[in-house]
Length: 373
Image (cartoon, rainbow, N blue to C red):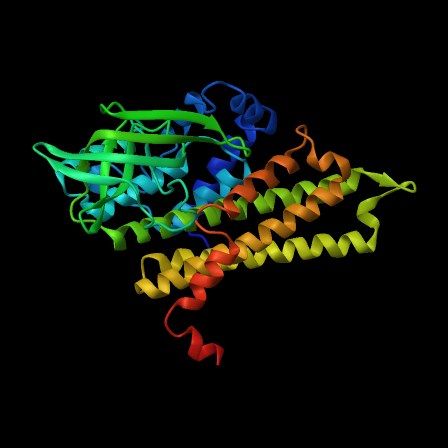
């Protein structure tokens, strides 16, 4: 299996990295995080100009019909720069609309507006008390004369307050169904806040909120959407791990003990070599997840996604802890990128299932018991 990027993918990665290196440095990011909005319209418009919002959208709706590997390229670069704009949320929302049917007139109209950067989307994965169970749903839907009415709440909706439309799962009689809810719909309450990693999240409350059902999508589609979101988070984490490894090596070249840079100490060189190995193993399984997402059976997709998320979570924790130790007291301060990278990696590790959750999911899939025996 060839995991090398194509020439076009490498050009996209290079263009995005040049933009971020020039305009989205650490201090620029800190300034954005401290604003009341927590995101930058200027940078979002630049991403639109670079074609990022159109990348995963089908060609019929004005996009580039990007593959999972195309999205992996983008998410790695965004993770490396600790970007706080709501790209992940919109990309996952696009996948939901595609699975529901991009040819549907309403879905097509939304996809065209997302591709042009006019609107943003956000999936509402979490409910209070549900932890990682996607189907522990207290939110309910009831059919009305002109659509559906939702009642319930969603918590920690990443960039929920910055989105114009939400993808919301709810109980409809005895099944799980997916709905689109507009931000301005009556009966919707939004509470926005900043998370510890500098991102934005929101609590959404629905009190008879008007919604449109996404075709015949249900539990299987919602699980696939969650797998897509998980894979994108893995790619972002790989970029952040790369940045953290690089920052640690550079710091050890400048910090001195006994008159020499600590990078010369063999014990610390061994630690940094282990950090690099963790990062490369996480990268390999993330690339495999990208290959398996749309080209394998549902069980193979689940297996590849959970393997990647579990290994990425282990790598994120190990690299983050080692980086903080090698930075010394500076590693936990707000003034260095290492602390912010570790916070982001910690949140990714606990989003849509932590290491234990995905190891259990992997082991529960058909065929594992026979292979283990």
